[in-house]
Each structure stands twice: as C-alpha cells, then as structure tokens.
Length: 210
Image: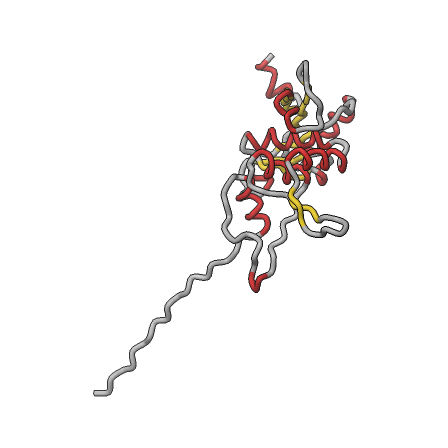
C-alpha cells in the first residue's frame, strides 16, 4: 500500500511593525514610552509633525519630549531648548498661543483628544476615544479668544454643530488677581477656565426644566 506524503505545516512568523505617526503621538500624549521611536524600516526616520500646543504639552506637562534646534554660526550642531525658551518661542510664533494652549491642556488633562476644528469653523474639535471616529465619540466644538459673539453668530455655529452631530462649547479663560508675566509657563497656575455647552432650546423637550 502506497504511503501518502505528509503535509508540512508552515509556521507563522509574527512581524513586529513600528507604530504609525498618529499612534506614536497618541501614545506619547498618553504618557506611554515608545522604544525605538524615530527609526523606521531600513533606518528611515519616523516623522511626526506636531502643533505648538502638542509640542509644549509633551515637553512641559508630560516631560516626554526634548526640543532640539540647530545652531547657527561657526559652532554648528544641535542645542536643547529649555521649557522657558520653548514657551517664549511659541508665544513669538503665534499671537494667541497662550489661550490656545490653555484650552488644549485643559481638555487633554480631562482625557479628551483635541483636534483641529478648522473644518467645523472652530478653534478646536475634541473627543474622548482616540480609536473611535470623531462622530462616534463625545464630540464638541470650541470657540477661543476675546471675540464678541453676536446671537446670529452663536445660532449659526450651533446649527452647524447640529448638522455634523457635534455639540458647541464656549470656553472662557481668565487670569486670577496677581497673575505673573505670561512669558513663562508659571502663568498656567494662575488661569481660571469655565466651560459652557450651548444647545438649541426646544419647547417640547425643555419646557419641563423651566
């Protein structure tokens, strides 16, 4: 009787891949250390482009990143910025950096993921879960700055949020008495933040709350 050849089972190899730039940023922002970040396949560097708020949050709040800048002149090379130098650089690059960073830090500390709100006509859009799409999380829309909002603007913004299934939030940022100079991160200890969620009043739904 002829013997049948035995089938050889192929062993599956586990391939370890590096995190994507988005996953790397989310992990760093959550305080998780990443070993080997910056060296991709074939020795190529993994590039992650950060906003000013993200860079200061990682460097100042989490102490998980260092910022190096190139030297100019005869002594070329890289030098590390201190937190104060990084703070002053961001203030110089963006006029409303202080308010923008306070909002970013405020929601990051509460466990929210802050995103650009440009496509919603706002300063920030935020949600709770990094893995969930924006429409499935706990979304919101934020207006920053000292702009005076008219009722027409507020109603239009609220209508836009309803169309994209978002909630409109206004964030009021104020300085406590005796606030030091804004040129150092120490000013963050003297900031008061107040949230206001705006929604359309529907008589059939909200009459019982009067």
